[in-house]
Length: 104
Image 1 (spheres, helix red, strand yellow):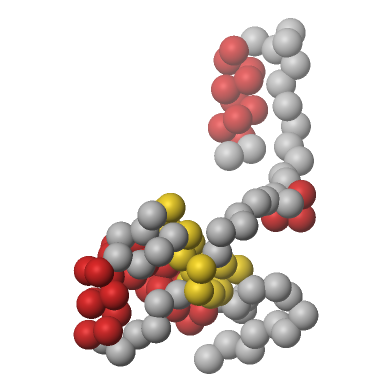
Image 2: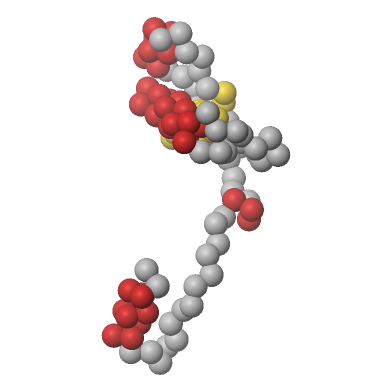
C-alpha cells in the first residue's frame, strides 16, 4: 500500500443529489479504487438521504453509509490551471490546427 501524505486534504467522492444505490455504491467503489492507486486520500460522501433500497444493499454487505456532504463548492486551489500558448486572431485556421496538434 502506498504511503498517504498526512498534510494533504482528503478528496471527497460524491455522487448526485438525491442519491440512489448506484450513486452511493459508485462513490464508495471509486474512492476505494483511488485510495489503492493514488498517494492522495479519497473519502466517499453522499449528497442526500439514503433511500430504502440503498440502506438494504449497504446493510446486506455490512457497509456504513457515506457521510452526508451538503456544502459543495470549488475554490481556486481546486482548479488545475495549465498555461498554454493561444492562437491570435490573425492566425490562419491551418496554422491554428497545426499548433493544437503539435501541443496535443
